[in-house]
Image (cartoon, rainbow, N blue to C red; front, side, top):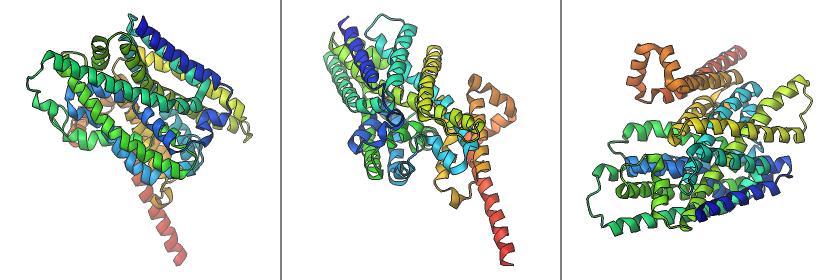
Amino acid sequence: MIDLGLVSCYLAVMLMVGWRARKGTPDSYWVAERRYRSPRVAASLVATIFGASSTVGIIGLGYSRGLSGAWWALWGGIALIPFGFLLAWRVRRLEVYTLPDILARAYGDRVAIPGAVVIAVAWCGVVAAQIVAGALLLGSVSTLSFQASVALIATAFTLYTYWGGQVSVIRTDAWQLALFVGGLLVTLVLVMQALAAAGHTGPIPPDLLAFPVSERFGWYELLVFYPVIVGMPYLVGPDIYSRVLCAVDEKATRKATLAAAAAVIPLALLLAVLGLAIRIHLPGLAPDSALPTAVAELAPVGLRGMVVVGILGAVMSSADTTLVSASTILALNVVSPLVERRRRGSPFPADVQLRLTRGFVLGLGVVAWAIAASQGGIIASLLMAYTVFVGGVALPTLASFWRHRLRIGPTTAMWAVLVGGGVALMAEMRNGDALRWALGQRGIDGLSRVLGSEYGSLLPVLLSLLVLVGGGLVAREAHGSEEGKGSR
């Protein structure tokens, strides 16, 4: 009861913070009024990154794979470095509200609207992963069933985000990050003390200490699959961009991104080490339950609740960011342009857009709740979301920053979104049955030889790239022939 009381108090405080911010302006709800400097933005970035995937998820990967499990977040930290130097200041300079706003400026609504829909669909899976992680943590300090824990966590996440929006998120991310790091260090100390008390002196399986690759994680995953599917959302991601757009200026954006990269890399290694230590002490667990089980068995009453609060803070900071980002995108980049088109260009009032955003927070929260209740795998949920997002939106968005040089037009970008996103959805529906039916056995065998075992995730990206390159070449040739005619 003491541990559950501490967690309940934490959730109550978070709901109070959201409630007090409920009367904010549209700009405060969408971009926190763009007034935060690099330390606060960097803390918010790290807190957003270390959600379910980088707490329960990476510790689970460290438990099952060993040190090579750290690559899930290591590639994210590595990707933040070129993002900080090349893209972060470009994103902030645009003064937009969402990632699809960038698509709309570059290519128009016929690209931005399908891109926004793809993002919303994908990010429901990301929010669901955070809910699953939160439910597993809550289960370590209570007797609630998994479904009841999912319901409670989903309700708390959704209401907090519904009331507060981005301004409440960025205000609380710094101390939620501090709680997370504290909870992580306490858990590591508890596990190491348990190992010492048990007198563990046996050899650790060499495969678990292998780095950068191991028997469970090879060069294909390290150099092909992870950089594309896991690293790309750090270069082009609506949650990452939502943090950048809250910065006061371009200089603060660059500093915050590079500082976040410097923090993510060592924390990723620390999480994998913790997962490995838990495996040595508590073998035979399901990977996703490694952290909750270790906390439940090793932490004394009172401290157990504090540790769960700390790690739950990281999960919540990621969940609220992804939920408000997806909801803002649906309101501003799907419904608003369609309504304005029907009203023949008459602008959609900002206060109506704000109410619409809050409505989507509730709707997407319910959808994510349903996904979390039916699918318990954290990494599986995130891979599904990343595959759909990267396949449909990442490359057209990345190309938009250099679209004039690349000769990428609206039609080319639209087909890249539709083809990549459509094939990604086929790859994820019913465990890929739709894609296997469309390609046939020969097609599947050929793709497996060329793209490897993760062909279903890589094929959408490859097709999106081919559409962009092909469209750019056609446009370049057409431009060259027009210049030739003009010279004659």
